[in-house]
Image 1 (cartoon, rainbow, N blue to C red):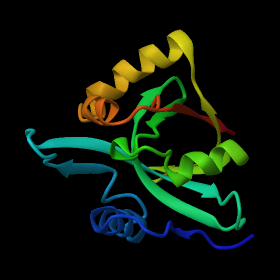
Image 2: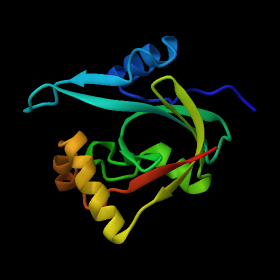
Image 3: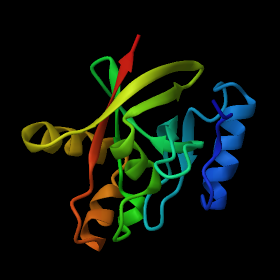
Length: 153
């Protein structure tokens, strides 16, 4: 299997954040402090998601904000409200087996898109850890996917 690398075309702030996370083994970068445009500074938990490219078969790392849900984690495929889904989301639709690093913990997980009441509940949770998701939803016509990463132990 190929060595995972940062996904191409990530914004510079994500590259810097992911490199700090990776180089520290997860001791630095798990909690990310940021000041979103028009908002107060906030500290958000972040994880590293490794997916398998749907076309290339290469393994790509994406830094994402998350919330805890049961034994797993909830992430949001917002892409800042862009009209198309992010690459990592398209990858998990093709191959839901992923790797996740949360702080110093690394595990394999299965990714699943939630719907209905579960989506509504987890969307509200996501708005608590990252309120700008509400702004992103207003910018796009697509329903922003909410994804649960269930650990495979």
